[in-house]
Length: 243
Image (tube, rainbow, N blue to C red; front, side, top):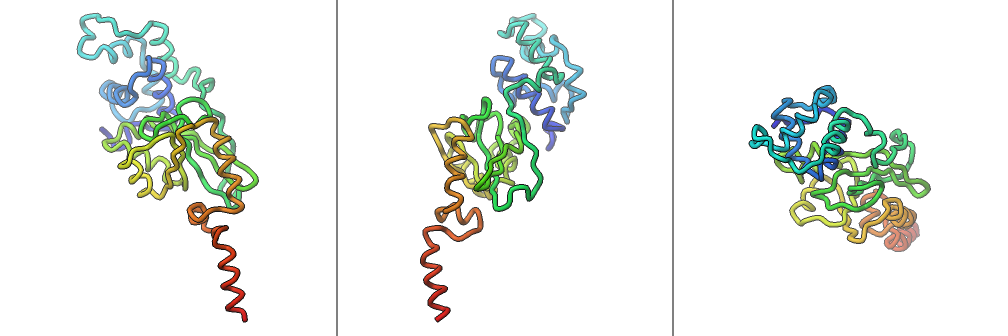
């Protein structure tokens, strides 16, 4: 498989939504089948050439020439093709991204949220459909990107590829994550936080935001500022040196 099997995030989004429409078909399997048919990289233009019959044959695999029932209703096949064409993608449950330029939110951190539906923390690191990317400061939090994991799942080491997908973030929230995957996340410079309960992403981030003004040591290290719990000792040390 090509190092870059999917040409754009728009193409990755279309594939992710189509896989969901096909009764939750494994996205990695769909990517592989599409590459077999269209060749890598998968572009928006190539996806736009697919037909309902193409998708039926892809799902049927080796049994396609036997006219087997693929277990997916015609309506779902048509929905999947429309999504691959780019139709209805704007009406999907991918939340709206807010504009952001570097420096817009001074003294802020970038946080990824493992998500499957809408704007929620509801995903396992290794299987979530997307990462919601937020810029968080004491006074504001802004959704600046939504990153589909489809392309990462086409990689030989999917956990390493997922870590690379969010390596510009300082923190990633997940409902769960395995030990080997967590090690790869940390190696990418990202601090994983498990929150098994999950819930609306912004509610989770509001708790983090409230701690930015007086961060504990682990968060202060990420932010590059003194920890609140150590501030008193630093002040005493500075006062002693000044005498």
